[in-house]
Length: 239
Image (tube, rainbow, N blue to C red):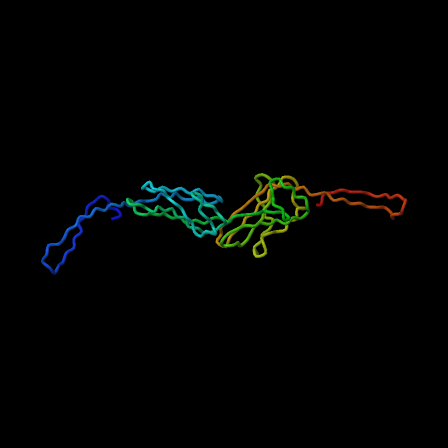
């Protein structure tokens, strides 16, 4: 009687072999069906608001599986890592309404947890001063990773240039980048990680390339105690 609340129906038990009049009982269906309006979720944030409304006006609760990808905290989906997940909104019903639920399946993008240069987390405005740096990324995804590609460009709307690709994720995701051939000043670095099922996530950080100058000392003679030396000192950027 899920969709016939308030209507009366005759329930009849008939013995087709006997001559006794059948017994008729009037039954009223009292429970009503309900539906749940569960708007599409938007992936991309580590905390995704959850909202759903039951047509009965009764409260809705949420759950998500698998829990190693994301968990539900009240009306917030807290993302732990990238991966495929099913989020359910449900209403258990009561004396007047039948239970109801609605589900959504979505692919959460990978979660980047670190982007470093020479082992130090890149902060906006970080100065890169060595002739060579190792860019590395750490990320979490239930499917693992197929590659990470690193990019750079002069700050602004210039096209991104690839600085290297690591497609052997078993030993970490990193590339060695020589800075001597890059322009000094405001610069941007970016990394894009990709999973085997083509899910991606990226992070970019504005930095400053400012290579430390090198000091060269040329002496014109031998060192003698109490004597004097003549020579030249030159300072140059490591290009």
